[in-house]
Image (cartoon, rainbow, N blue to C red):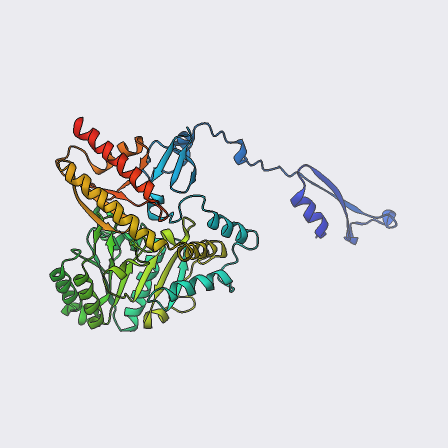
Length: 480
């Protein structure tokens, strides 16, 4: 048998071309008497082909939409707009045209674009250590968890990477909590027209059938979810009563059904900017308590100051057992959090849930920069003032153009205006018109135009946006 030295093996692995080297043989049986005084050797030849990688710099960038069409899966309907830079509340496309950004990455870029404090925080962190996994302690995760807890009803935080992941974590926590109570068939009640994410359980919690098509098994999504009308108290009471009753045939098999959680958005964003009714949420709190279930609030869009309060549920006077956050938490740097209080904070133990990137130093440093900016610049006060200004302006336009515009809805800087069904234009079409005029907005359902600017937006920028909106609506009225 031939034995290869470590040097030889390294040479085989590393060399970019043909190799030839000699290894002394220790096989005495192959030596003859006449050659016993000479050293015997075995020659080894190897050819290693270089793997050529195409460098990113070799990819031509003269047609970005063409690259998307060829290489990116078509899971989004994109506007014909290529953004290359931003500053504050303004974005610039590849032609140099500027746009007033009232989308903010869909309620994500709380501090706008190219914020100095956020840049400094991320730059400093990536210059030291940006990721080590959750096998070790990291200062930024500890500090951000403390900030979340000290500024909410929560006692503990779990970090992940997105709103969908945070909601998946909340769903797992609710099921484990229900299992600890002896439930074999735990039910989570969510509201119709809700939106909780695109992962499978979060998508099932999203009570909009259009998102479920093609993702079920035997006609079902993930089992254990039931849906009620948002803000409908009678519907909620009836569903809780039904789900807390185990069918006889199931009970005969030793199964037990019950409500594990009531999971709601304090404000339904994707469902059309519908604010929660305080009486409805008070009832949800009461029913959860009576059932031994958890009340979960999805704060992914409305949370982190968007409503004028740090958390949306503060507007409706309840404290959930669990709430989720993402989007603005990192100011555009991906991060999510699932926060819990009381016994819910201690349901999950080591090995029950995890996230490789969750709470990494880079993302947490971004979250801390956002949190510090909120305090240093009184951001919540700005949200309230600019939100009131935006509402007043939109209401005036609704009065002026009643054939197109209907009611104004929402809190703080998460505002929407409904487009009349017979207006001759959809919310999506109006969003396209506004983009052409230099204002970026986003639809919330088929009939609501949503305004979600960065939380740093100024009085002048609100006036500018209202001016563009009025001009665009007026053009529709004059040229239907």
